[in-house]
Image 1: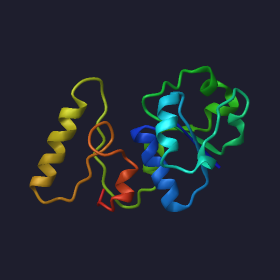
Image 2: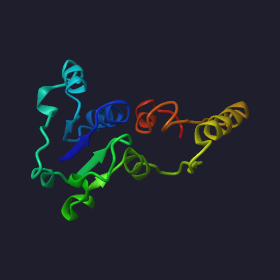
Image 3: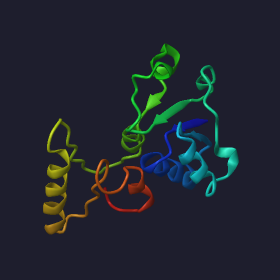
Length: 146
């Protein structure tokens, strides 16, 4: 079973992907307001209350990008090997797609948008996602060529 830690935009895209693929998972968000809002739309059995010692029960833990991996709970030896981001899930599901990945400190969103616009203008089917546009895992659900 998998854990999705952080259930806002990125985390919800993983939730939807797992539901679509019938993959067993649990989810958690530290923010009680987020949990309350999400519980209106999802089965209560999906929710899991994080306690210090129970992260070991999961095969993998998908942590939303806005959550720091420097937290003690993620740094423990037996847990740190299980921690992933949505990017890990995305990459593990690619087949023959070509990727342009943009990293760095400044200008990533602008550069990503420009490259996406250039590719689209040249009639190349393109999915622009991550920090801008759709969450990465939505690419699979939207059935867009990535």
